Amino acid sequence: MSQHTIAVMHAVVHHHPGHRAPPPRCCSRGHGRSSVVVRAAAAATVTSTPGAAATAPDSPSAAFWDYNLLFRSQRAESRDPVALRVTEGAIPPDFPAGTYYLAGPGMFADDHGSTVHPLDGHGYLRSFRFGGADDGGETTAHYSARYVETAAKREEHDDAGGASSWQFTHRGPFSVLQGGNRVGNVKVMKNVANTSVLRWGGRVLCLWEGGEPYELDTRTLETIGPFDILGRLAGGTTTDEAARDDDSSEAARHGRRRRPWLQEAGIDVAARLLRPVLSGVFSMPAKRLLAHYKIDTKRNRLLMVACNAEDMLLPRSNFTFYEFEANFALVQTREFVVPDHLMIHDWTFTDSHYVLLGNRIRLDIPGSLLALTGTHPMIAALAVDPSRQSTPVYLLPRSPEADAKASGRDWSVPIEAPSQMWSMHVGNAFEERNARGGINIQLHMSGCSYQWFNFHRMFGYNWQNKKLDPSFMNIAKGREWLPRLVQVSIDLDKRGTCRGCSVRRLSDQWTRPADFPAINPGFANRRNRFVYAGGASGSRRFLPYFPFDSVVKVDVADGSARSWSAAGRKFVGEPVFVPTGLSEDDGYVLLVEYAVSDHRCHLVVLDARKIGERDAVVAKLEVPKHLTFPMGFHGFWADE
Picture 1 (tube, helix red, strand yellow):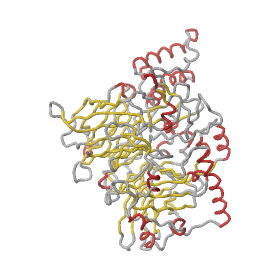
Picture 2: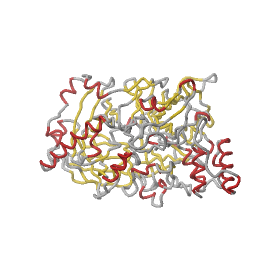
Picture 3: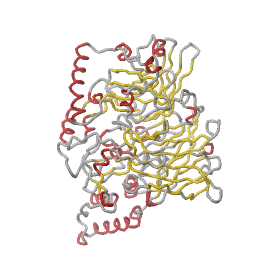
Picture 4: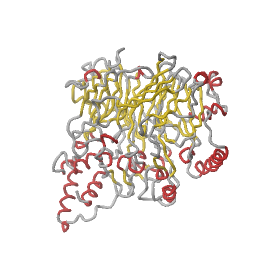
């Protein structure tokens, strides 16, 4: 496929009403074959079926179209709930009343020539609300979608006078602006609230990796404003138990593993110098909440973790864990300082521990200088550090009592899992007593290879030509390097000393890429049998690994795997389990199916017990075509 063809395809992919970008070059009749491509592309735009321009449904051209259309901007909102049409099956009568919230980006291209990385796209919250009945007595579902009105969104979006226009002014950590202020632009921290969503204590929160959550109305999705959880804590929203469990002594914070005094003092000086620069120049908060949270169903607590702003640039990581009751009253906080340069995206917990699987990184000095100029994304300041052939697993005591029991182990020294992997997402973790009086800890998660993970090319984004290249996500060694499902097992004796750690595939029957592991939430933090994840069937030659087109159900007990796959040119997002009974797989799996070549989205309801059988699909609900949305990230099911 020629570079000109790719350029024209890219222009059409990002076409939208009101886009005032200049027309593609070389589009006159005098350019022979190029003019044919342009006319075909233009026709595709009108019919909203760009794949029709491809000669075959499984070709490099179709792969490019399908992949890029998965990240096409959606400017429209649905402020009033829209009834969804059931196109296949029926909503089952035992489906519970509740709402499925899905967070993700909605805007990637502005009206001034800039295209941002998917991770920097403005947050666009979708909701699917189940409940009530139609005239025929059938359960109904309604869809709504609205942008999260963050400070950055209000600055970059102008809808005065009924006309809507966008101009990106914030770089964001992963992007480079092509229009507007580029060189010297210090607007890096663009809180887009697009990564995950949570309903807790009667509030809906949209979270992002580098800033405070935003609160939205649970029904209308109207943005209420920033929800400053950490600021509320400073105001004294705590319980008596929190005061007892807040152990912030130097020994508790640092453990026993310390660097030489002079080296530690140097890091302290660097941290003090960096904080005002990061805060004053780049508007970074002193502490940033991670987008991934956990819910302890046994204790009915929300668990969250924050890092210090300077951690990304220094060989030391600060983690503060918070546990909240249902009304957001703080139950306890625990702070830990780890002498390692780490990036954490997801994490987990057990009854006694917070569990971090560390992704080792290093400061890239040349990349940092380029990032400061604005000609390279800010993330260029970091690089993965594959110098160790193992994965650090930090077992941090969840309480002072748990710390005292583990007298034989220094928590600041990680357990080195005997397999180097970049931790992606964790589905579950639990601990059980063993015959020696110690505990066995087991994690079900996804991880990828350091050889594949690349900060600069995630999702195939290329800031130099504003394209998404699907080949990066579908490399020849994708089966070995891309995310895969694994089980990490740790054996501790009664003094907390590690007697063994192993890593193996979660299923030998499913060896293709998979991510976004999920379980029945009622089995969180205890032994579970089933794990559900998004996966790749490998049915498409030019998109064999990503985007995912399947849901795989793994039986952890025997390693067997069964799957359901979307037919044709369709992709799927993260699965979410909706329980309806006492048995672990008694319930339904919700996911969005993206029929990109038809410009359609469907919410799919699968019978969890029938995954792998022909009648696994219980219902498909169609989102109105004009509201078709780009790929979402993480979702949340909330019972009414």
